[in-house]
Amino acid sequence: MYICSTKRNDVRKSIEEMKGRMSSEDIADLIARNDGQGLPTVLQVSMTEYRRLKKEVSRNALIEIVRQKEIKHAINFNTLTLHTKECRHMDEKPLTASILNSQLTGLRLCKHCKP
Image (cartoon, rainbow, N blue to C red; front, side, top):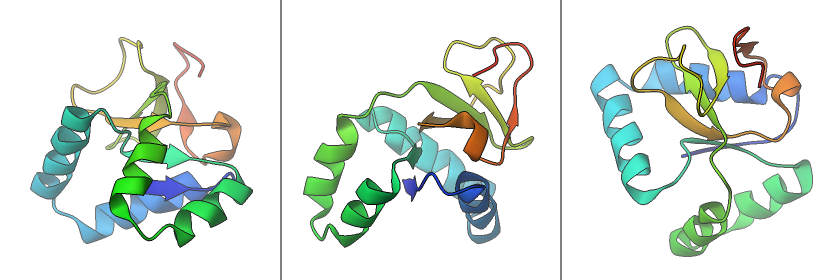
């Protein structure tokens, strides 16, 4: 799970970092693991909450906080496009996401669903 702030382009930078550090099999495993737990792969939070979550030591406590966030978006990993969860024009295995401000993600916005 990648926790991002509302700082401009922070979500895009996190996904590009994920692409650089992980193989496609590792990313598929991450997506499957998070989907099985009902957790978003990418979580965008306010700057205040971002600082608080970065200081959180316990993984279980962090997971409980994140579990309360609703998954409303999906990210096409290959094209770096942001979709709503119900959009028909996204990839079969998207990255699930909980995004506060879609304009600050640095991702292209889907022209069909306009998140």
